Amino acid sequence: MKAIRPVIRIARPGDASGIARVERETWRDAYPTLLPKAYLVQNLGARSRWPQRLQGGVRNVLVAEAAPHRIVAYATWGPTGRHRARPRSPAAGQLYELYVHADHREKGIGRRLCAEVARRMAGRGMGAFYVEVLEGNPNRFFYEALGARLVAHTHHDFAGQRMPSVVYLWTDLKTLADHRAA
Image (cartoon, rainbow, N blue to C red; front, side, top):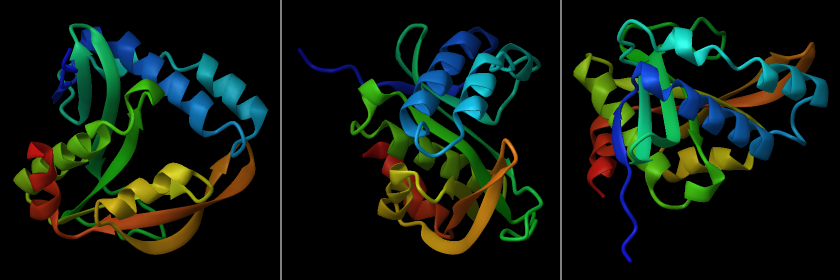
């Protein structure tokens, strides 16, 4: 039996619980040795922001849907935030989050989501985009495999602890966007 290729689309309000499930389970999988346990417990229990976030036609949240109402991954993106490692620029965007459920990794879903983000950013006149990742997250090398360049070492504060992070940059959005067809 052939596996069904997930559909990449803009998130809708009805996707809130599926996105929250992917977020909760991927955080438990990716961060137990990187982030303070108290922070994980507190924040994973308070991830009810998705229903409010998806109201009003949000365009900057993409999901991968493996079957009707079965979200297996999501990505959020938009303008660059103010950060000393990333100059704020209307010509650059930022990938805020990319999470793929553990059962669906190594199937090209993350690559397709990144490619679709690149296509949409290019469509809004952006010529580059950044992503910041905790330095100890082994999944960060996924971005390097997609052609991102490591451009900065910085930090992110979690529960009062300064955690080392790295910033990656893509400057060739067209080439990255072409990955969505693969």
